[in-house]
Amino acid sequence: MEKSVFEYRVEPQYVDFTDRVSVSSICDLILHAAGEDAHKRGFGIDALADNNYGWVLSRLAVELDYMPTEYSQFTLHTWISDYNRLSSTRNFVLYDASGEEFGRAVSQWCMLDFTTRRPVDMSIMAAAHEGHMVDAPSPCERPRRLAAIDGEPIAQHKVVYSDIDFNRHMNTMRYIDIIFDSMPIEQVEKVNALRMDINFMREARYGDSLSLLASQGEASYAYEFRNAEGDALC
Image (cartoon, rainbow, N blue to C red; front, side, top):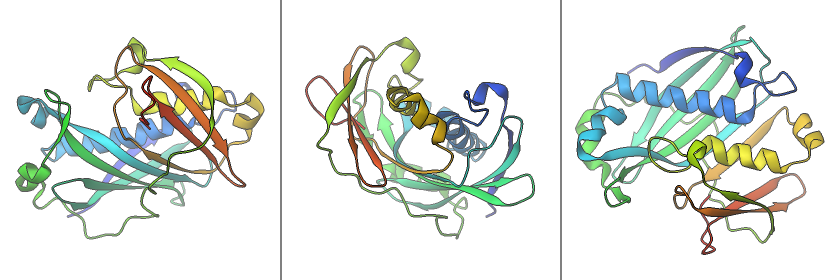
């Protein structure tokens, strides 16, 4: 089975004030490719809807050597490398217009029963995945397991209409944007390469009140979203 290939252009709505693509926008394009490829291969969200099931992202790692600028074009290759009853691993590599690699990502997915809001044994989709696996390793270290942080709340957020997606929980890109909104603008301006790991623990639903905690290390920043009960969400 071959990897799937998608062509993208960094449109004006994807860039921030630096004229470079925002982190949330390029993550959105990466996850868009995942959804399109799953749909094309017969196990997209439409195929799960009859049972009121859906795909949800459990972990994500993204590495970018630089942030593409407005109107630049890039090619994204994506493939599923492994699949079991608990999760599916989808990989991505990004190439610029000259064919040079500049980004990599690894995502891990599970299935959710939207009636119970509980995970589903994914072996029921094994037949649909047959023949769609690619024997190629992940292009970078898989998403790291992140520990709880000992930080101070730096922001509060109430989950509103514009935060939630078709899964009726807060969209991945909103977590990223809220983190960047909490940073000094001078710090955001300097972000032109990164390694980002995300672990999703629980859903943030409409009306939830969230706290964003932050902790700074020598060469990294850690963030944690908690709900009003103090449970870690992301």
